[in-house]
Image (cartoon, rainbow, N blue to C red; front, side, top):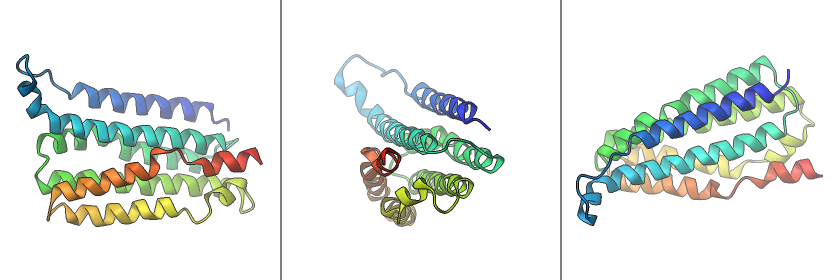
Amino acid sequence: MNKARLEAFSDGVLAIIITIMVLELKVPHGGDLHALEPLLPVFASYALSFVFIGIYWNNHHHLLHACPHVSAGILWANLHLLFWLSLVPACTAWSGEYPGNPLPAALYGIVFLLSAVAYEVLQRAIVARQGHGSKLKAALGADIKGWASLALYLIGIPLAFVSSYLSYGLYVLVALLWFIPDRRIEAALRE
């Protein structure tokens, strides 16, 4: 099966997710800088989520570039990833409205943890389709950044009940880990 429909559908869903998130941003009530203060947590939550969606879009693009054909298992694994990412706008809005509350911060981390797990499942589905000698499997290697991200989410989620801001700090750290696109796949495909 050709991967073009999978890429187009995924790109469309990710674009809709970003559109829904930006629609949650409200116009300030006033024309001075003080009118922006109440909107800062909402904007910070939006910005972090936008970066995460951008990271997933970028890495998803590279991952599918390494996959010449898709199977039913890959289609379902991709839908699994898109399901978790589709929950990001709701978590973004809630955490932006209540940045100091632990439950929105924890749920924010849970959604991104499950998105990361779903991305791992998608990678494994593609490797399984290609076989154990695939370039993608070699490129992914030990996936230290992936495992570190999961660990940071697993620390950040319960940490939200101690300090939601420390929890968000760990989520920002995950975003910083992935901000530079994953070059392992690109390098393996050039060889």
